[in-house]
Amino acid sequence: MLNSSIQVKGLQKSYQKLHVLKGVDFEVEEGSIFALLGSNGAGKTTIVKILTTLLKQDSGTAAVNGFDVAAKPDDVRQSISLTGQFAAVDEILTGRENLIMIAKLRHLKNPREVTDDLLNRFGLTDAADRKVSTYSGGMRRRLDIAMSLIGKPQLIFLDEPTNGLDPEARIEVWKTVKELANHGTTVFLTTQYLEEAEQLADRIAILHEGKIIANGTLADLKKLFPPAKVEYVERQPTLEEIFLAIIGKKEKV
Amino acid sequence: METINKHYFSDMGIMLGRSMRHIFRSMDTIITVAITPIAIMLLFVYVFGGAIQTGTDNYVNYLLPGILLITIASGIAYTAYRLFMDMQRGIFERFHSMPIARSAPLWGHVLTSLVSNAISVVIIILVALMMGFHSSAGVLSWLAVAGILALFTLALTWTAVIAGLSATSVDGASAFAYPIIFLPFVSSAFVPTESMPSGVRAFAENQPVTSIVDAIRALLSGQPVGNDIWIALAWCVGIMLVAYIFAMRVYKKRV
Image (cartoon, rainbow over all chains, first blue to last red; front, side, top):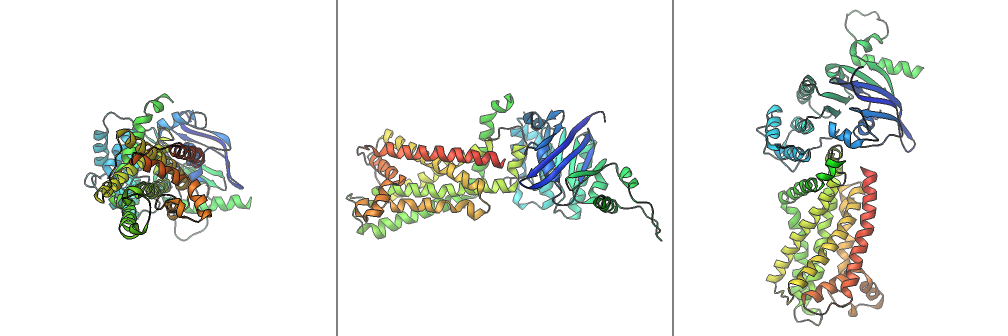
């Protein structure tokens, strides 16, 4: 890979006796959408927290936009944005106030213009001056992602961005993520929804029991699928089947 | 990093603005904070006051310092609550993954606590004035009172920060304030300690509230303050430093 936004080597992390990450390696190419796939508790959020400088790894290295996360956390924070698992929006403020607050914290010269722009782009102009506590789940998520875009970070982390959203809101978020990537932003996405990874990601890595057990494009992963079985209806394997099959194989070994 | 230090105070100001908006948009928190001390004040002045011998002609004058401390003690319960909610909702994670100083969000809460408690204290003093409170204190004495109350607020605020950061439930975050709200009742705030049985009296005379109440009372009535003010300041600064050190330790562990 020529330009990688994220380089992770031998990452390990334990919480007390629980060994969550047991040597994780992967790279994320600049400008791509990378999906980290895994079941609940697989350690996806732990990886996100380490990469966004919220948590320190026990061993191994991780570099984000060329900066080591442990040695240069301030440089990392300048170039990333995190949209965490729970919408990190201020419910008592209005949508507009939330955006202006972040724009000011990023020390932009024209917080109001940037805010108007994003409200427009995310279809929140009509709701801009309402308290966020009156927003629907999908609107909240859109605001959350809009807040992450302020200051044009090169890399955005989306930790389970569609968790708890209804199908319609989910499709809205997908649209947003695709647009981001079209604008050249690198997107690091975690999800437990296989369809989401299939829909969005250029590359997919599967995290299972603390290790990356598969990493590639959807086409690559499809090749790992066990040889065709005889069926009456011809169809492509879904990613869900691929996922379960790979995990099953690993566990037998 | 340089840019982070350069913007430290403006970042803190943004944090302060944010939580002050929270307070003004939920006026119920200010009202709740002010209403209980006012009720206690009314109860003690107009119901029990006639039976209490304090040696002063005006019981409101005697009572006010203790009421102010109760106000602050109930006010900081909301500081713990707001901090707890921020930790829960993930907005702190966003702040901490941004290029701003790590302690700025926390200091935003501490400053908010100072400002909102000052507002409650002013409300209580206005009500006391309507109830016949009067003071012969000059500007310097009032400044000294404000200083003591600010230090008391900071000492309790840092205690509240520990509670807000380490609580596992909303109730837990604010429950720590109840014993503190109760402390003035076992002090010289409502009745002279001389009237208490010896064991209770020993506790009352040696706990922080009594020296703080006595110092404020002396300042407001234009009496010589004596040693009380130094004991009061020592308590406030002592509690503040210990609480600050522990709070920072918890904060570093949590973020």
